[in-house]
Length: 633
Image (cartoon, rainbow, N blue to C red; front, top):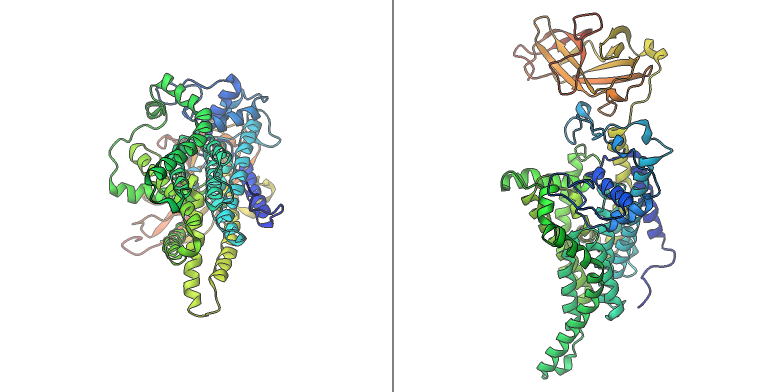
């Protein structure tokens, strides 16, 4: 075997690894425990392995049993993470799982917040017990993410030797995708699957382009990576037909062309090569994975445990999938969560539209590029590129089938095993289009220059994109508001005294305006404190009501933009919270009182009374609404 197509010190690779590690570690620190998709159950499975040192026996019921509804998954990633957390006392795990009933992935964040769980100070640094174990398990995922960075970069350099700019840009598109970074920062087996799939395609590319010889050792290594991918997630079973195509192609390529007349000899030689190549690959696959499928068959009645999965983890859809639902709901959400990262409900639609347009352009450009340079690319490169596209097609079709059969499966992260194919289409396709456009203006503008220009721009964009997502969406979604100094109340708002029976005390208010038009929002800034711990989550409402009881605007929120519910409040701590109240359609001109109150989440009709009073709200001011005679449009 020849050496890897990487220098001992490749500055592009080092830069990619460093940037990825920075973003993944930062995201892991910023995102509270169990806020990722199914992270609670991914960790529950890991904890079960660490505690019992044995695989769980899942139940045919919702939740799957003690190991959670992810306990049916192949165990490789969970086993590695379990080894890391085994020495840690994680008995406080269940106390970290207090559900936030107001959590909402989409919609107005100020209404509900993005936190799936309430989070206590026990999650703060320095980490201990279950918190420490979760962060260590996340660290295992980050390490697999770094392996993915290396494997994808090496894959592109294998296909396009000495084109480091292309490898840099394509890898950046793949691994600096905000959603990819987010998944890499969680307890999850999605990124380990990407790592092993990328390594498998790296070996395939090396064999097909001739960097590695087509002999037993090469095929054995390929079989190991495929086996590890399968033992990470059964999605990797789709690699088996890919590998078989590689075997057939290599067996065909090795046949002597000068012996065409000896047909029977060629057939027997071809069959022999197919058999031995298949044997070399099959030995590690069967040796590493067979026990798992045999165990499934014995325990659950089928090797893939489909019946168990349907009963415990992925309940069937309530009704058949319609085309309208697929194109209006599932595919848009699939696209949004592919890019959206930790808060897909907040990801800007304009950016998603840009990505979509860029994707269409890149597909056309990639097609033109391959058609134009097919002779220059050669069969040795076209075949692995074709296999990558075939793998992408398989992953997408499998995703559609999953959407068709089960609810809640329209998740973009399920496309990640083929993300390197998507990245290749983006970079080659966009380079082709840029070259076609600019070369018409300047004949000295070569495709190489176009590719380098696109690579520099693409890399810079994808280095900046995660920083934008972190600061614009991730941090605000989970960050608690800064404590307020009550000494500054006189400068910030008008003091008042309104104490509610649940322990909430409203000590001041500030209104953004005393006169509004229909298209404006009233900012109601409230200054809260409490003298005791509040054990339930309450919503705060701010309504505009006139003397006749007509409502011109209303907004009900979880304090702190949804990120600081009342269960977090500490005695003596002050909070400044602003509610933006929109004017509702049909509101008439006139004078409106601004009233503020609270109710326990889920019980809007049961408002909290003021102490020693019958009122369940406090009037904090009044505003004049200017509107046409027919009311606000």
